[in-house]
Length: 271
Image 1 (cartoon, rainbow, N blue to C red):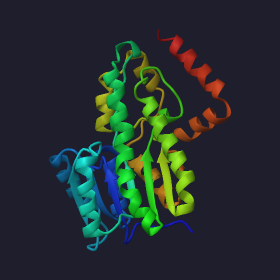
Image 2: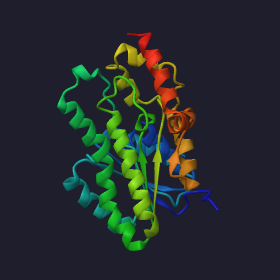
Image 3: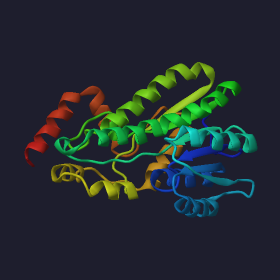
Image 4: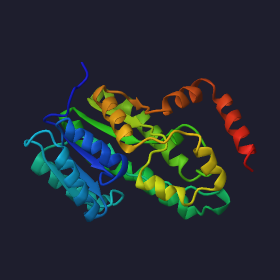
């Protein structure tokens, strides 16, 4: 039987101060879970903590915050060790850290590729590796990653971003296979365009043709994505596909040439 709530569970959410991470944390709090939010800046974390406290279902729950860059394993490791010593091993880690810098490939630098890989891939890998020994020792745990609809398809303007999300999918797929016999579950979310502060920032650098192609997609709210994410986690799903992502995933799987033909035709109208 799928889980119905997060009661008596502890969930760590990276990138938990805004966007999908914050919305997911609030949904988990509503369903009885306790939380630890990790993000770089203390002030947004404090505001997020207040919003989550307001969503909590019980006085038995708690929410803590850790201000840290999750790509810095030297700084993050002792913070997580201290949390585990005080609160116990978390039941779940949700890796929601990430950002996009869309730009034409001719204008991207190697540093743009490196930075997006560091944040989007290593920013999700490092917390997972730090918690994994605890899960293996107790024979249970759950790592959830946030990829993207661009984790299984390509779109002009995202040459530095899409590979990082493909990498997250590959990581999740491999860990799912290796860790399942050891009691550790893995899930991966593929959100479509979502109305977050990060998406607003992303729109500032999109090439015009990228922006016009994106307009055809239905924009989801963080709350809509979070509800689908949490429902999928409770049901034990591996691939979690909110909104239009579900049919796009099917198209990529069963008729990839058709999708490429469609995208090429639409791009040709704009350039």
